[in-house]
Amino acid sequence: MQTADQGNHSGEALSENSHFVESVRDRVGTVVVGQETVVERLLIALFTGGHLLLQGVPGLAKTLLVSVLSKSIDLKFARIQFTIDLLPSDILGSQILDQKTNDFLTKTGPIFTNLLLADEINRAAPKVQGALLEAMQEQKVTIGDETFDLPAPFLVIATQNPVEQAGTFELPEAQLDRFMLCHRLDYPTHDEEREVLKRNMALGIKQEDRGAVVQTEFDILQKEPVGHPADLVRCMNAVNDVHVSDTFLEHVVELVNRTRNHRNIELGTSPRAGIALIKSSRARALIHNRDYVIPEDLFALAEDVVLHRIRLNYEALADGLSGADVLQDILRDMGATPSVLQKPVGANSSPH
Image (cartoon, rainbow, N blue to C red):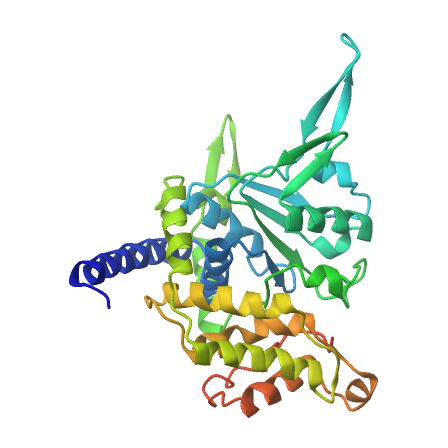
């Protein structure tokens, strides 16, 4: 039985974590309009150490979101623009010959950071994608004959253009499975878009030397963080203390098994999906100031955890079904309420 002192301590911890989460949300809101769900997914990824894939057309503030998040928590941030001619050494690092000593010196790549933004990951060749995803899984990088541990925390937030666009390589299922979450960004609402335009008109110019440049949203990012790595560590510990009931665990197992036995699904989810559902649900509960998970957490996160891990069979595709349609049917059969299913699941997703 929980004592009064333990209850007070738990309440204080929840209050501290809630204050940290709201501070980060408020800071992001000073630069990015809307996108509350994306910010929640970013925090879930941070609190669980899981990697996040953001899918959407260019111009939806994906890069800006990650940049402001890193500055809000005082984390080291690096960005890699993926292109067709990118090499694995451009990400991981390489050995360089010192002509004076005839010794090889190791030059580490941009992957040695806390928050790595892999911009447009599906524009790089599969060999480069594989090098990055291997480092994500191992949390280590081998350069020459030396092995280096990546910094802690280490989180990859990759962005992906829709596969229908020219010059893209679709990520294979085995690589997609290594992303804990895949979130699909929508266009802003009418009011949000109007606010974006109003804020952009008010940016003005910035004088430099004898000239000036037009300011962008990146120029107004506040440098003073609202949190520190210690706050992040406290939240990561708190996530592990969030209670998961046996009933909730059964719901997760049922959802995973339904994807493997559904008549329209050729490739169901791996055990990683169940692990990701538990971890992300715990983090979402913490973000919503709870120390226990509820079915709403599972239903809210099912799209981001499951959709990129399943593949429909030929018959389903021939009938015009999408992964989103099938997932909605599964969730509805499991008791998801109409309010949860009100927003179309995977609105921007491919039939995959």
